[in-house]
Length: 301
Image (cartoon, rainbow, N blue to C red; front, side, top):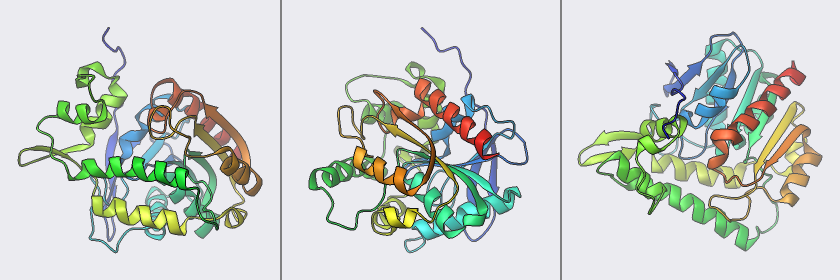
């Protein structure tokens, strides 16, 4: 059965500066939500959230530096501090005094870091399967190995050239023989935007150099539970029941969730049964995320 919904129409723009940041915008109000994606992703991660979010001012979703259509500076120009400054630069460009930040995966760590460094500029946070506190003890070996495996798979594709977009889908959905027409429009559009043409075919837009440098940054510089107590703004937390892969352990354990709930001004939270870290951003899962985001927007004023 063909999908009846249309693709989301993003209005493209860019934030000028030392590193130009591309963004997509849906809606034209004065106080849009600012959305920050994961470590190898781009702004079309938020296709479904933009579709379902009931917020009159809409949403602006960044391509973080080194990803999507944003500029890709050399190594030494990434990490949580720089992404947080970029988020503030985007709020300045949009003329938003106190931003409402939504972050998925690494974007949640960026959102938290921004709230810690610039508390007067952040009015509320929605953390989507990211932002768990950095442990001051040795990490659980099984948990660390699962995260490393998921990140390495994401990194590996960044060095690959795919002859056709269908070959790219085969990488993500092995053995399913899918085409773009088989996918919901929000997901098909994500994969199309993720690719750029190169000699021999297509390659993902994200820079592996950027991803690896950022991975080191958020694993060593993200806040501990104690540091999170310095974030006063209201927070919503959304967790996927599964990790990177179906059947894998969730990225935010119950223990990490409890530490976040104790440290943060946690107003709302949901667990998405059956969702993994990627699937949670699409379909009915995204509709639930949009509902929580809208509820927090109304609470935060």
